[in-house]
Length: 371
Image (tube, rainbow, N blue to C red; front, side, top):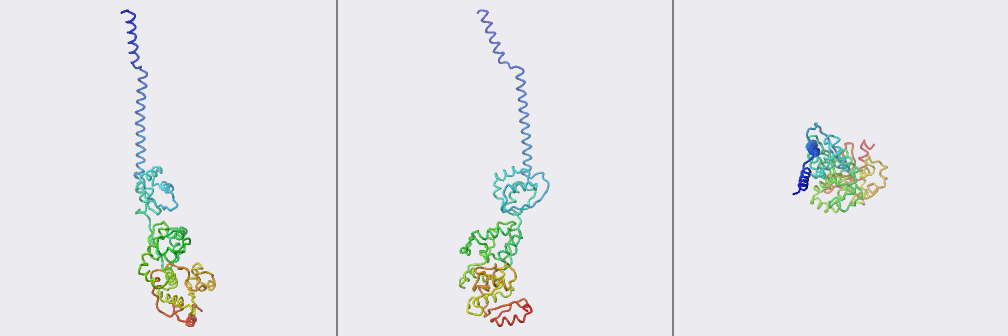
């Protein structure tokens, strides 16, 4: 073989070997990149671990100073505003994380209006459960509604106790269509439509309480107390249930507590003997108080032109003037059988009953309170 060709082959092999042999500078850079990558991965891992630990501390309520707070949620509060308050009170640190947890677990949908006692020992799940309808921390209040209270008095009392505002209760009473047969013929639009149906008793409410549910609680009790037997008894009287409640409401507002049946007899005697001395006028002072805003009636009030003015218009007023208790309702169903057409309060703070106007006048002339 010629010397030139052997030289060319040797030269080619050397070039290919040289091409495969890495250069020292390239090897150093590759090793540096590898080290930086490993360091970066480790650093990111450490950072993520730290962040996860910090987040876990908040989610699980770890390492927090002891604190107990009371939070009130109203119907107007958004979930965002509630979360802001939790952060402001120091119950959570990361709003975004709490919102994410609430959305993922469905706990957001369980948060409802009320007053709750929460603390920093409660983790995210406990906080959400603690603001739900079944929360053991939800604040409640007992409210005693006396016999004879009007709707306005009941609503003012419920507002005072933190159940709901007067405006919320009036709106619910006027426009919510409650599913009770005794309300079906009463049109919506005026909150007074429920006058007579909010049964006096002692009730337990959340604070605050959904106004529709609060009113419904009273109506449910009325429905349970006015049984089928009582409704059958109402039907036998020839009066409607609302008319019986109207009579009972006047009895409740007039009675001294011992004479409901006698007052009932006066009302029925006047209703059923329109040709008598009272010519069908009930002349019940409590109806004047209903239209004058609850003040003590005056002679001037007798001239107020209102269908509730029983000095001006004959027969029953158009609806109850208060919310009677069961004793007054039973008195309206079972009045004493008398010939009384009049009664008046004596100096002894008891009502005295009379058959005639002359007997009434003679009694009034004998009493210091009328002189």
